[in-house]
Length: 198
Image 1: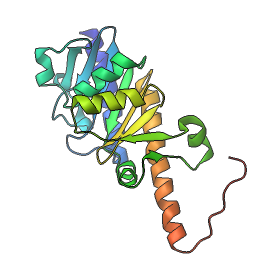
Image 2: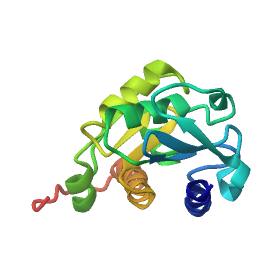
Image 3: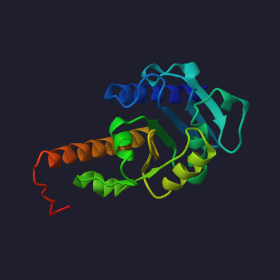
């Protein structure tokens, strides 16, 4: 019960942060944390703006259980990430700029120095939400990268803590926004100057 309460506090904090930034709306997005061979994940249909204790579902990582039926639609994706990587926290949000960029490229390559150094590049994959195929593609990408964008669906970020996953997800979204704004300025006729020091 203590671990579930801790997970709830974390989910409430970051659910509100994602909502305030406009990265989730309604019942979009999901969060999970690994505890040994189990994970806590948000309930299917819950709103991250106001996560309640009953919205925190405890399930197994190595096997499906009856609680999968009420946990997030993306439970299969979170589970596969924990199976294939050493990450302990996973965050998924419907990040608007990353979704927009995902329709036009195969990878997101940050253009600012910090994001390029940390993220290098962010792969873009495809798959039906909550499918085994998507789970395998996302987990595979997260073996080599900090985050992955699902075309038309949003960003998954994974790390050792929810705070780090949140920072990575925000960095991906900010990078997508910068690319968007830069392309608009190019269309307005401004000359693009490639930074020499990056």
